[in-house]
Length: 76
Image 1 (cartoon, helix red, strand yellow):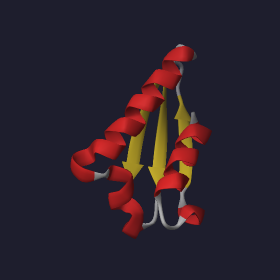
Image 2 (spheres, rainbow, N blue to C red):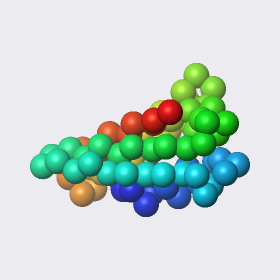
Image 3 (tube, rainbow, N blue to C red):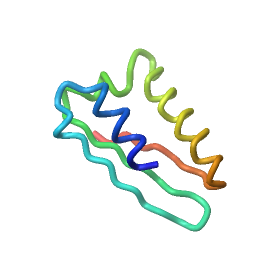
Image 4 (cartoon, rainbow, N blue to C red):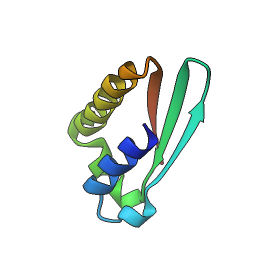
C-alpha cells in the first residue's frame, strides 16, 4: 500500500524527491502518512479535495483485497 501511494504521489508533484510515505500498521488498520513539499500540497489535494479523495478510494479498493483497512493522512 505504501508503494502504491508513493507511486501516485510522485507522478503528481513537481518535486518527486521530496515525497515521503510512512506506514503505521495496526492489527486491522494501517495508517499511511504522505508528506510532500509545501508547494506541491495543492497538487496532491486537488480542487475541493478531489485528487485526495481519488487516492483514498484507490487505497481503499486495494486494501480490501488484502482484507485490511487503510487510511491516508496527508501531512503538511
